[in-house]
Length: 150
Image (tube, rainbow, N blue to C red; front, top):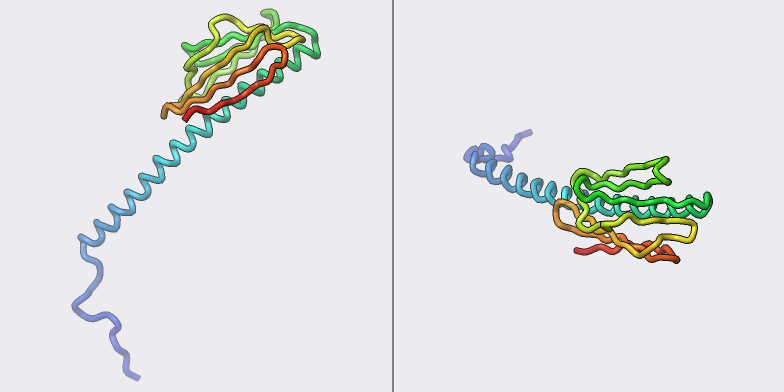
């Protein structure tokens, strides 16, 4: 039985230039995927914090209705946090994720009692890529909407 050499003697493998080109192309593909993944994670974080704010507003309204007490919301744009206060007795401070910030918040505190919020208000948030979302509510009905801005 005679064995034939499949590879000719003149081609001994990859050249250094071919190897550098393949590694460069793979690096560009991985870098593009990493940037895209970071952008997607930033959008997901923004959506999660917007839904958490909306859920906290709903829960505060339910507590105000169940306990027949007034709750007050304070928004702090400088440190990207908001405070839910029950007549200055029990306070809950919520802080946004590190790469998020408040763009527009109500300047005056918002009171929520068993009838609902005292006035309509909206809160705008943005992530580090500039993607924005608005959470807003209306008085009496207390419907809460989340609107994305791209």
